[in-house]
Length: 502
Image: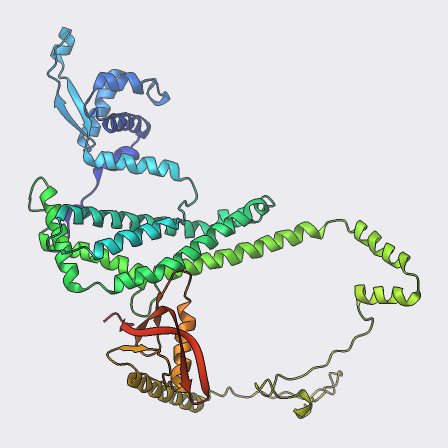
């Protein structure tokens, strides 16, 4: 582990020191000059600028020099001797220095600038085009021709683009979902003004969900098909290119193997974000659930606001219109019809019944036996006494049900093993498929949720492995079973890996 991780960061002392306002104004000016490629500035230049601020109005040039010395001790500034021509004896007697920000300070100031713009709420966005660009970059990167001879610089640039897109995706998605769960969005959705742009907001979330569902199966397929041998060769060459860019090879520098392993871990993080790990859901699936839940919650809040706004609306015009209908009725019978349509029956009776005894839709209600319902007296004194009874665990019934379920799963798994040849099974014209296997295949197809322009999907099964389902365009087949035939599009089922990732 890098020893720098445990050292005390004294470079941040100027942010919380007693005279933090003076130190921060000095460092901000030096940082801005650094960004303009004016890396070294003189103390007199600094004083001319910072003396305009209120925190420096009562301080002299000597006070500035003492502040600069403190910043040097904390490691925020590096100095060099100013060897230019002197214009007075005073300048000759004093050592004149030029000041520059250290690398740590530059990064601290960049972070502080970002913190100043964040505010009290999360930002982020759900930009759907980033997923499409990530897929284009990733498929070109994985399918790089002759990865052993592909130029290291181009390989490194491709990986940097992929990593940058992935970091933006998960950072923006994390911040945006946090903002959806925050108190600010709850306060906003409870205001009447939210009704104006709620359609645009919900449409934005729905478009993101559709884009994610379309591109996710493609990304999963690309990430599944990469091999360990390809990872080692590819990222070792990228690590070598990064090593060449470093100016020195000190003892604190990570070795080639460590750098390669770090790059492979980053690639595995990308895989886990879209594929998940073991039985855990992927972050992409969780993001989809959070966004769907946000749409439902916002729709419910909008409905509540709409009901609230109509609650106190005057119904005078409605009542006058109803009165006109009754006034225009020519007969009493016509008026009674209008009344029945508006207010319903005066006296109603409700009948209590139990749930359906059968699931057969062809059964008639007259074929069912009548249900006997015992009535209880309304008098408390005549009510039956209640006795305390123990809770029945029914552990034996549960164990029997569990054994029956495991036995059924074992039979289903053995049935599928007979159908799959070399981990593949394709629905062809006239294929004989057992009823139980047909139910399993249809269940997988319902989980796949194929979208437009998507021909491959990955689903998890209950048998310890995952299935890649590929739709064969333009082909329809008719399969046979014991209870009849079924016509459906042609599909190819391929086992792609175990759920535990092994």
